[in-house]
Image (cartoon, rainbow, N blue to C red; front, side):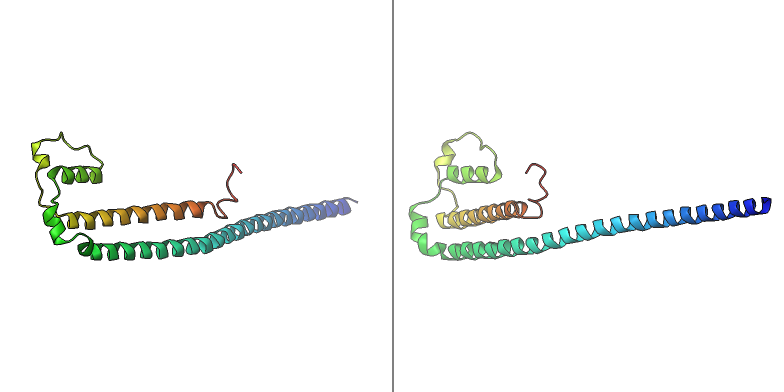
Length: 164
């Protein structure tokens, strides 16, 4: 009887050991499955985002190219609109140049003086070319920001927003 009880005890211990081993094995497989599912969801999210990003980026690059071409054409045509005779007849004042440069630097200009009324060495045609370039940069930045806003309003970012 003692031998049978001992054998039964050994058998129960062996079964308990096998069950504990199997439990840890199943738990490890369950953790691996959860990790794989999470990675699959993340990969799907990234793939979806990449497809949308390529679409938005392509639209932005195309628009940027159009803006740059238009600005280049405007700058190239400036001498036809602001001729050398116009430059000679209407010289830009030093005050205009100072004010334009201050606005470009986002700084207040110094106090105006008598010298501001004098003609500067900057021709109106040169100013038109610079101003056209500045507007082109402004349009490009505006379109870049609009593309970013559009991208953030598309899935998967929009779906993931906590406040909606």
